[in-house]
Amino acid sequence: MQYGPKSITGVRQPGPAPSFAAGAKQWTSTATRSEPKGSQNAQRNYERYLALAHAETLINNTVGAENYYQHAEHYFRSMCSEPATP
Image 1 (cartoon, rainbow, N blue to C red):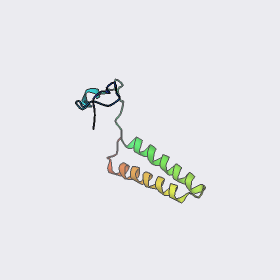
Image 2 (image 1 turned 90 degrees about the vertical axis):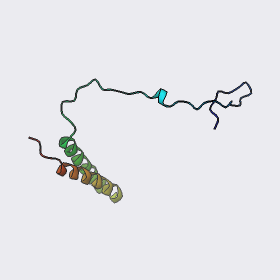
Image 3 (image 1 turned 60 degrees about the vertical axis):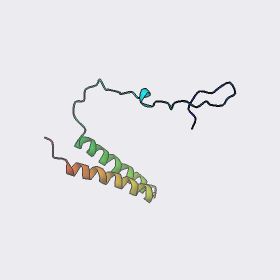
Image 4 (image 1 turned 30 degrees about the vertical axis):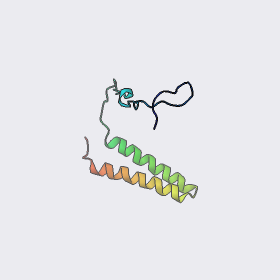
């Protein structure tokens, strides 16, 4: 691999590899989160994927419906594994 800048002839000159770490940025959020991600998001996603699966069933797309049912099942299991919040 050739990493250096192109010369006048258009051929790259060998040089050091570019440093990918130099361009890395760390993004921080200044917003405060009132509540952590939890069962409410899981419940919302569960209901959303059930609705999407139902819609796919109505148009006879069994493959798409099964995909959405599997997503819904994931969130259902996620809800069952978390302790109940008051």
